[in-house]
Image 1 (cartoon, rainbow, N blue to C red):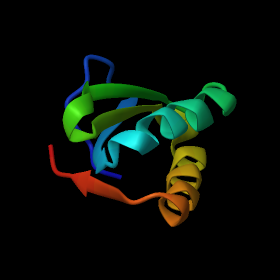
Image 2 (image 1 turned 135 degrees about the horizontal axis):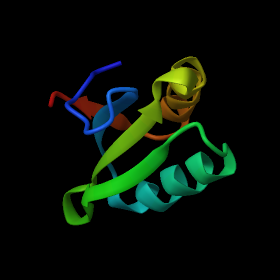
Image 3 (image 1 turned 135 degrees about the vertical axis):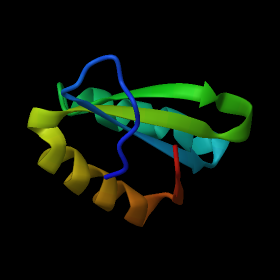
Length: 79
């Protein structure tokens, strides 16, 4: 999991580029998995989002991202 500077030391942040039409789906899925992470649209027109994950839920988030990447194309971007 890529780490990016976060104001909270126990929060991991990953940045992805995906199709604009898939942003809503990513948001919806993460909301359904309460507490696993939050999705923020950084540049919606370019399909860039950030996923913030509490360190305590890292393993769950990794599995969720892996499964989602089998359904939608998610290109991880370096911070």
